[in-house]
Image 1: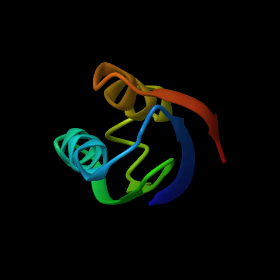
Image 2 (image 1 turned 135 degrees about the horizontal axis):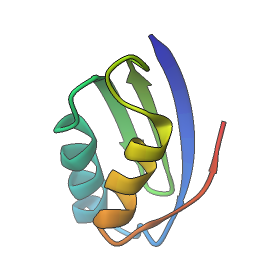
Image 3 (image 1 turned 30 degrees about the vertical axis):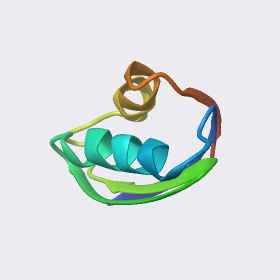
Amino acid sequence: MNKVTLKIEGMSCGHCVKAVTEALKKLVGVTDAEVAIGSATVTFDPGQVTLDRIKAAVEEEGYRVVSAG
């Protein structure tokens, strides 16, 4: 398992947190997603999901991933 913390722009409320959490947890290979306003820490299996796909899931919800580390 890998763990990554994403810095996310555009999140401003609890609804934003919920939307990102649900989007991440829907991805096959994501085992945990701890989301707060402005960031998300994601635990995932790199054999099932890529970091690029994780970022895309956040961006599909209308937010911008500005860094991942």
